[in-house]
Length: 94
Image 1 (tube, rainbow, N blue to C red):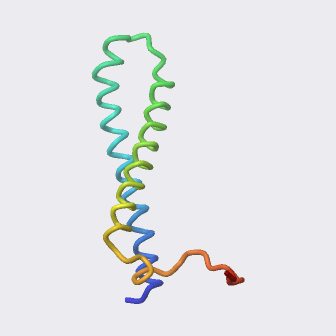
Image 2: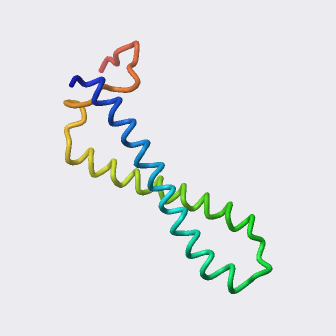
């Protein structure tokens, strides 16, 4: 496989992982919310709670994605296996 194909597969895999982590964290947070908040306060505004769970799940998936990406960059020589996504038309002169 060439660099371009590696880059495409990495982007697809990373996107799938990010969505999967968001879904798993949403369901885990929802179970905790259902177990504690809904039973303790039945009059609680549930729409706001669900929206906050979605935002929290997205934040968790963002931080997990960044941590996994940082570990991958430390372990793998990125320039050797992946093509750059954005290429400048003009080369920088030092």
